[in-house]
Length: 335
Image 1 (tube, rainbow, N blue to C red):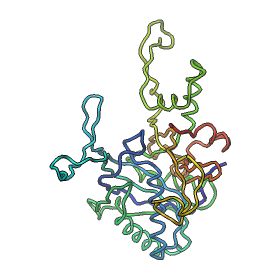
Image 2: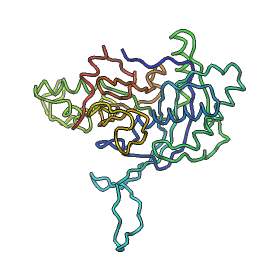
Image 3: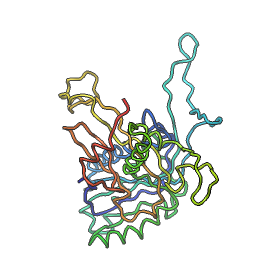
Image 4: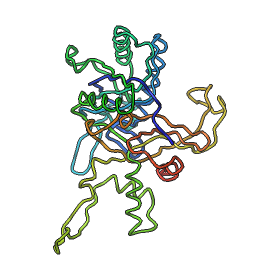
């Protein structure tokens, strides 16, 4: 059974202002960066921390969004991204561009880590300050990290939380600290909702596919039906009481066999095995942090199965009965 790796501390870099992050999270979704971008950020920060001599090992990452501003124009039911103007070509005409979606964000990043050298408060404060300085020079989902608007305020300072003792002790410590992440919303995985919607669709249409269930979760579905205890009909949507459910990319699935290092021309890293992949999709939910009972429900971690060709992010907000069922039911591609 998949589970979040064990860790001893939570490191929180709060209220980061990010300008022009990538709003197109996959070929089919937009509105917030993919969780794969934040896992990549975690690994890049890990390498920089090791090069700086910090004895910190990151295990997982969580994201709380406090504010966002997608750079798009709304016109009725259509949204158009704000695009940059490139220099004209040699003939004086407009140059071809690749459409890019951008979004401004205010985020709090929550890293699960092991920090064995934090026996003294001075070492802890120095490492947190060093991590904040390292992150300030990095990109978050392609966006630039801006200086804090009010750096002297307590809410902008990095902080940490020790999670030791029994499971009850860890949960109690997290429930107390989670209030510092308000107001905001955390993205958690809801693979179970996708499975539930598929069962609902198959009651009326046994041939309904998982793609149809995923698309159904991506929109508001209105149905004409009489309310309970009444003979009069009315329009009702399936979002009522279901939470803020969104379609999200959760990783990548292999399209072919693993290639030897250097055997594929123009690969970014000639020393690492290469594989062609495509996006995997599932469902997620935006939740206020005060609704999370333990830190593991907030955190995302990598789960790699080279043999089956699955490279995806996982979150333990709702844990499946077993891994085989999860891989069979919840992971799919749209090729």
